[in-house]
Structure formats: C-alpha cells, structure tokens
Image 1 (cartoon, helix red, strand yellow):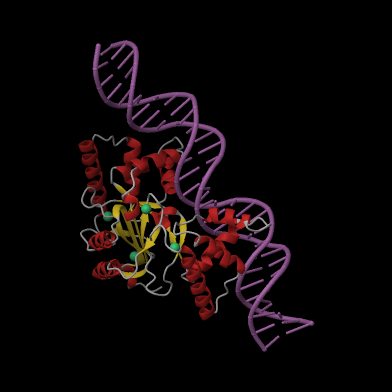
Image 2 (cartoon, helix red, strand yellow):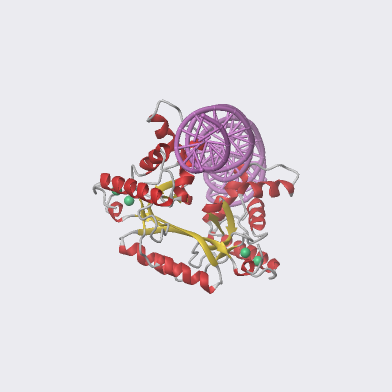
Length: 156
Length: 156
DNA sequence: GGTTTAATGTTATAATATTGCATTAACCGA
DNA sequence: TCGGTTAATGCAATATTATAACATTAAACC
Ligand SMILES: [Zn+2]
Ligand SMILES: [Zn+2]
Ligand SMILES: [Zn+2]
Ligand SMILES: [Zn+2]
C-alpha cells in the first residue's frame, strides 16, 4: 500500500468489519481480542506474538502472558480476521475477511509491508494444480518475498 | 507420490544429484551434510531439525548439538538441495535442484507427504501478480495443505 | 610445512509456542 | 434473581525451534 494513505481508515474499517463479522457469527470480540486486533492493524507490517505481548502489557497496568496473546490470535485466525505469515512467525490483518480469504501475500524485505493479493489468478492456478493431482485443498499460504514498488526507487 | 514407489531410487538419485551439484559449484558435501541430506530423504515427509538431531545422534557414538544440524541445513538450503516448509518448521528434499526450484508444495495432512509441484502454472500466476504491482520477487513459498489422492479413499 | 580459510565442537541462550490448572466472567434456563 | 453451565482469562511452568559466541580441528593452498 502507498506510504501515505489514510491508515486510520484502514484501522476503523478493520475494526468495524471485525465487530460485524463476530456478531454475525455469534463470536465475542472481547476487549483483549479487540486490543490485539487493533495492535496488529497498527501497521501493514506483520507483527510477532511477543511484540504484541509487549504492547499489550504497555497499555495496561497488568502484565500479560503469552497464552493471553496466543489465545486471542487463535480466535482472530478462526474468525478469519488475521493471517499468520509462517515464514516470519508473525501476524497481519486480513483486508477482506469472508471473501476468498486467500492468504496470498507480497512481503517487502525493505519496508516489511505485507500486501494481501485479492482477486488474483494465483488461487485459480493453485486449484488447477491441485485438481490435476486429485488433491483436496484445506488451506493455502503463498508468501512472496521481494521488494515493493516504493522501496525499489530507494538507494541501498 | 505413490505409496509403494521405489523410494531407494529417490534417495540414490537425490544423493547423486547432490554430489554432482556440489562438485559443480565447488561446495563440499561433507559427511555430516550428506548424513543430514540422507536423513531428510528417508521419506517424502518434511522432518524437523530436532528429529534430525535425534537421528544423527543415534547413528554415531557422539551426541550432536543443534548448531551442527542447523549449519548443515543452512548449507543444503543454500545449495538448493532442500526446502524449508515454514508452516511446519520442517525440511524436505528438493526433487529438482537447479530447475526453477519452485518451492511449491502440496502437503497431505493425513500422510504428511509433501509433493513439490514442478512445471506448474502457479509460478507464472505469481510472476504476473507481482509484476502488476511492480514488485520484484526474491523468493516465494507456496504451501497447500489438504488431503492427497491416496488418503482421500481412506475412512477417517 | 606454514598459512589461511572452512568446518565442526561446545556451551549457553534467544525466540516462539503450548500445557495444565485455577479463577473469573458471561450466558441461560428455571 | 438464582444457580448451574460454558466461555474467557490469569498464571506458572515448560516445550519447541533457532541462534550467538568462541574454541578447536580439518582442509586447502602456496
Ligand atoms: Zn493502512
Ligand atoms: Zn517496501
Ligand atoms: Zn520416494
Ligand atoms: Zn496423504
């Protein structure tokens, strides 16, 4: 995404979407879960569980522990509100919960932004390859690492 | 791959390929590195570093340590002889070092076999999606989890 | 042979994730 | 509203995966 987009809008949209999706499915977006989701949406860069733990502890007087964070993450993953980027051991918000929910990402090694690919042909190609082998797909992850357009111009 | 293929052939081919590729590139396939590669090729199921550590320790009187295994794995990854399956924290042999070296896998959740997709359209779709965003690809991983043809027939 | 570089040994520790059980909060039917 | 049930959180310990730092040994090279 561009460097100077209105990111508050991303956050607001994501939180509204999350509230809607949870109420729709009878799932409870508790304060802890909402906090974690907000922290994940603080940027478009995948964030690790222990970073979240630090931030969560910082914003309340009580010190949190790993299970608190991991349980919230599990919930958010189940609801399709976030993705896990396995190659980074990190988590990032889902732009489009409910639609395809592809889990295909472009990850810039310079700015660390992870951009989810929506409505792409990759899913189709994967389906087709799987069908050829009579393979039934449960889940898929596509993690493409490289350099984004904005960082390509920079001198390094 | 089929359940009852001649797997000794897979192992022999992989080791021959590895020796050839290393000599070609002036890289040293030392005993430890060859042992690790052989252990990885013991099956088509991705194997974790600590499992390799156990096996390696078992086959010699001396007890190995994590750095020994991880250094061998780093070497084999550099030479393109194995792939890391990030979603499993595990490693699997590369069927076709040097050709495309796609890193696209079908992973069966029942039998745990990881089948590398060669000559597929997925790479093309990924290139195309990346190009549309002016994204320069360094590396890519595609991990498709589900159920393979052989396990689909089983009762569960 | 002596020098340089690569590989391995060894110890310790970092980083990521889970288990098990106690406690509290929410929900729900009487 | 009460009491019972389930869901969520608190908390301590530990499991799993991976790396850092430095010493030692082996290989390569002239
Ligand atoms: Zn944004
Ligand atoms: Zn970038
Ligand atoms: Zn085989
Ligand atoms: Zn299978």
